[in-house]
Length: 143
Length: 191
Image: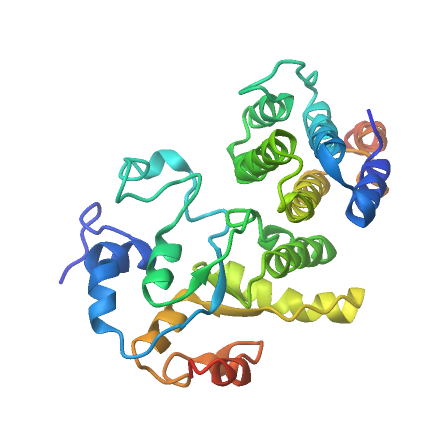
């Protein structure tokens, strides 16, 4: 999986200078990479399926399994897909730059939401909430 | 009146105003106008969730949408506001992280504020008290902690409607907000 720090750096780079359909595709892929972390942290294998043409939406649906609160980012994912379609279907539209700006902010919101949620749930690879470390420590504490 | 379990219906102020007064009823009562005020309508994550408890929504024209809510857009538009395209209208405000991870909350709010400004909004209209206080507090914190100031004003939708109905800024409690919108509202001729 792509490290979270790498995803954030790529978001910064796209915010600074992303343009055209390639940037839109990259932003959707970054959204997928973020959701992969959430799904993986919950001991599931990230799906390769698509929903309405987007793996992003299938991953979101998978991420909601037994956790309806994850639906709070449902529209964020759908906005990402919507903006992807706007940019890629008409790259020469005068609003393309603006659409990419908004798309980058939407992708960043998904990143912040998911990483924040993982941190609260003590999932993932954060320094203060590393699951492998926790798993090693907990048996000793409880034993 | 005696409260009896199951006999009290709880509804959101937005739904109440829309169903009880509506856009046409509001227009008839207007004494002022939001006259071209550019507004990003921010609903937050709770207004439409969980979807299954809102069987009356998503029934087509005239009903509220759980994926693209619009009642606040409709009412403020009827009062003269210009609603901007705002893709984060139902996104998380980070309220749940405020105690456990305040920086994440600030970054989520900052992202909402930046998106609203990028969309051309002068004001973010809110309809959730938690979102409202979070947006206001973290706007201040984003500037102090991350050195990232934003200029967009944050007002509750009832404050904006009240101004359009002829109430004074004091009557709608603008002075109770954390941010100071009074000068801006006067400059726009709304207060």
